[in-house]
Image 1 (cartoon, rainbow, N blue to C red):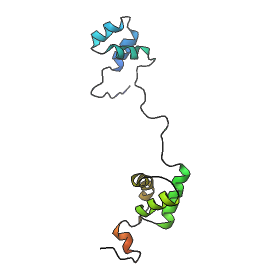
Image 2: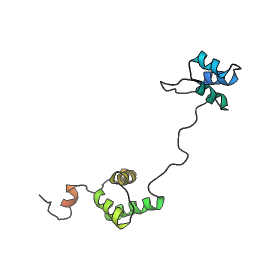
Image 3: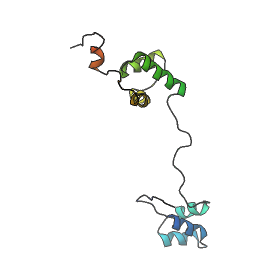
Length: 133
């Protein structure tokens, strides 16, 4: 069993097994191992000696899948820059989303494309508009 312990780990799998199998009192074990009584009690009450997984059971997302698909389709159809797309999503679709979050949802789709939509001054040049001084 390969395990990676962080620098501040107070117990190892071997120590945890010892805690669970020992007949000594919680206080004696805590003093012997140099850990708190609370730590001893936690490991004694567990049925396993491995750490619990820290990955969340439910990952919360800002957008539902159909909203994400709609935004990506809108971006592909209009080839609008990020700021214009953000305005369309916030005002037109009524989805309250930040610029950074929108960019995060669009980034995976940009990886597969060879020519991304122009950003900033480049987007203004291609539309025949004069930049504002």
